[in-house]
Length: 217
Image (tube, rainbow, N blue to C red):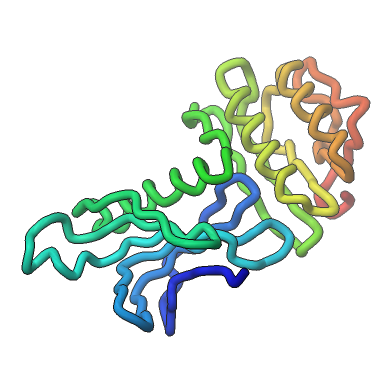
């Protein structure tokens, strides 16, 4: 069965976002074929394949002027058919549409939402090569930031890279629970931790595979 999707002729890329292992691209300035007009579309790519698997769209309500009612519909293209989540003027606002679209992606793939940011850690993902992924973590991993740390690690693991490097050079505190998150994640495959000394505070990183630099990983 053919994948049912918006008939886009041309559009502009506005931003990139991750929902778990799924890479999402927000597009606008859309010219579409057919009778449906789109203000914004969030395209979702399947991990590992590079192929679209889901679209969430802000669809123009062309009857709003004549009959009244909200300006846009929130619609989804899950592969076969079309789902209408209802109309609202909010879907004409880029940030409100984006927030709703990302939430729908998480619901569709049953991905737990990211825990609230504590301000204690900063986790930055970087793709060095297609098969080489680096997660740089800075700050303190303790009881209050553990859920945020765990979510960042699991999101990185779910990308499916052949090698995952977790750079802890900027981490000043790592609890034993934080270390347990790393040990559990290391069972997923090629998993390397970077830290110059291999010990953060009172927590030794053994038995993890620890390297002194990202370059040496």
